Structure formats: C-alpha cells, structure tokens
Picture 1: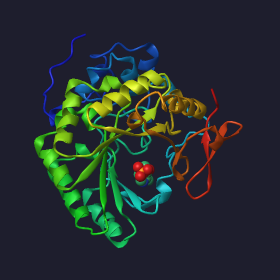
Picture 2: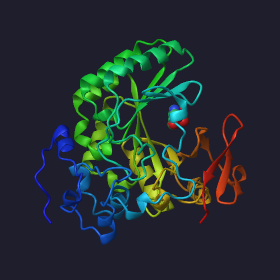
Picture 3: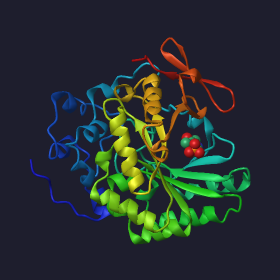
Length: 352
Ligand SMILES: *Cc1c(COP(=O)(O)O)cnc(C)c1O
C-alpha cells in the first residue's frame, strides 16, 4: 500500500476525500466483514479526509471511521433522530429545544463521517439552499429570549470564510444574542483549515468553539498547532467527547485525552453518552460504565481536566448531567432519567 499524493490545502483535502472502498483500501487493509459493509445503501456514506486517513492505522480512530456490516441492522431502541430534533425544528435550519439557546444547522456537509454521528439522517445529504437562512435569522430576531446560538451541522468550519463571516455578522447584529458558538471537528480532521484569516473572523465575532475529540491519537502536531493558533487569537475552546465502547471507555485513555486537550487550551466540557442513533449499538457502553468512569476520574486527576458526563435525553429532553447511580433508574432494557423540567426520558441500555 502506498498513500496517494494529495494537495495540502484544506479545499484540496476536501476534494480528495476518501469516499469509496477502493480509496479506503489505499490506506488500510479491510476485513471481509468491513468490505461487506459497502454492499447496498449505507445509513451514512463513507467520508474521511486524507490527513485523518493517514492515522487510521490507530485502532481507535479506525473504529470510528470504517463502516461495519452491522450498521444496517437497527438495534433495539435505536432511532434515525435520537434527540427528537425534527420535533423542535422551528425553521429549515433551526432547532429550538431549550428556552434560551438554539441550534443553528448551517450546513449538512462534514469533512468526515463518524459512524456514530447523531445526525446521520442529514449529514452528507443534499441541503436546502442558503437563501433560506433569512427565515432563521428572523426567528432569532423575533425571539428575544434567545441568548446563545450554537452553529453546527455538518461542520460549519467547512463553509468558506465569506459565508461564515456573513452568518456571524448577521447574528452579531441581534442585540439579545450574547453567546455565539460553533461546533466543529475541523481542528482534528482538517487542521490546515485553521488559517490566520479564519482566526481573525472568529475573533472579530467573539466566537466560542465547541470541538469534537474522542482520543489523544487525534492530537497530532498539526492539530495541536491549529488549536494553539486559535488560542493565540483569543478564541475560547471547549471539547465534547462521545464515550465509545472499546475506543475510549477506560480511565487511562480519557485521562490522556483530557490532559492533552488542556495542554492546547481546550477545556473538556462534555463526556457524552453515545446517542442511540441507527447503527450505533457497537459504540454504546452502559450508563453504569459511564458513571463508574467519570467517578474514577474525580479526585485522581485535575478537576480542570474533567468534563461533565451527560446523556442527551432521547426524544428531545435535552442534556441531562449524570452525577451518580442515584440519578438513574433501570426498567428492563431502559435507563430512566429526569431532565431539567422534571420530565422522564428513556435511554435504551441493555446493560453490560
Ligand atoms: C447541545 C445542544 C445545545 C447546547 O447545549 P449546552 O448544554 O448549553 O452546551 C443547544 N441546543 C440543542 C438542541 C442541543 O442539542
């Protein structure tokens, strides 16, 4: 196997994404089961940037990117839209679940497709045209109770500088908006996107970045340099980590990741129980396991390195912080949790 020659700029990397079985086999050897995953229509297509594909020999990263033949079998309790976002969709691009914050889905394009993606129903699929953002800005303007806009997708940092600057400028003209965040995995999967020009735009609009990292193996010299550059430009960064079975579900792996993030000025924010999206069974740990892990970190490592463990309540109850076993109740194959409004939600969890 020899890796193909790929342009180093970010748009060249996107244009050369690994999207087929043949391209993937230029980087790693696949098992017959993994090859079988390419037969028929996938839930989520294959997409990996060439720079991230170079690290697929690492078992953790390989596990999150390579399709599995089991993905198409819907697991018990799994949903296409596990967070009930469609029910809270108030414009074509806006999800309003919580009172004072909204989720702005600015693009369905993402440079890589994580196999456990909570938005596999829309990621990598054709989107409505950008002109429809007008309705979204109007909704945010009219709803003066909204203070915090989280722009996500897809990955908003895959938009061009001018589109991003346009969206941010428009949001910053709305007086009641106090916080603007962007959710992104770009520093891990496309670090060359973090240019001085992009940093200047993010700084101008005082954007917080909410980054997605799952393993210390993602903290390559290029990724660390990208985060340091963002930090040098004064951009606040937090990270969200999805708890993934066999990939990062042990205390040492999480500790290495969380300290690695602090060293590049990224504050671990959430450790998320994996959403029960279609095809996610192989990634989901039990909730008891998550509780045990996060408890084991408290006291043994820097408090600054510890994120909040949360379950995003299936059906749209929002994120529920889980502090201990007292807070959960087992009913058969479900865990029952209570959200901030006192309503009960069920997370499908067959146990360990
Ligand atoms: C996660 C999320 C947010 C942001 O929640 P925080 O807990 O404030 O980070 C906002 N809206 C939706 C729909 C979300 O899923």
